[in-house]
Image (tube, rainbow, N blue to C red; front, side, top):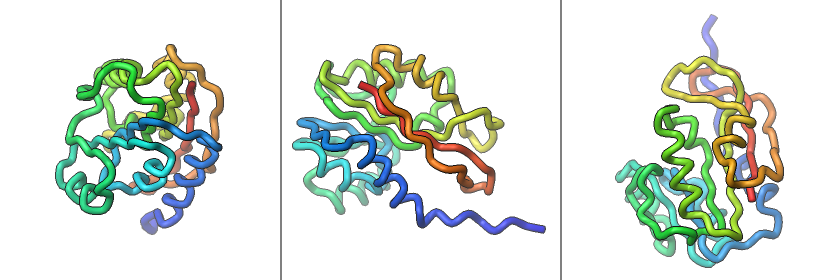
Length: 180
């Protein structure tokens, strides 16, 4: 018996709800969205910031995002090589990006995020969590592993999403981790 592919139509609503819950009334002067893709979450994040930046390694996706959101500054770079000055972003958001980063590159990504984060900062990380087999180039980690990875930040809140299915029909858990 074959499984039907999962329905992802609910994900945008769920992710925007997580953003709203994670940010509350918080407003940023300068924000960075890591792994923006075509800009699925960009309008909700840009509304929360006076000056919003977004990065993605896929040029074609960024071309679409630039067309949709001309008031956002987009850069075609990897999270391991952020082209920004130190301590300039007071909001950094990453949704579903770190599960795509191999373990041997993760410290470099975390170091870059820490480098560009201001002292008065908020970091939202939303990722698959738990011990899942490393299939399909997905690297799941626990909340405590993310807490250790971003040790210069304080983990102030964790919001877990209900059990869901990924593209391959496998069950997973997802959590938003709010750091300060």
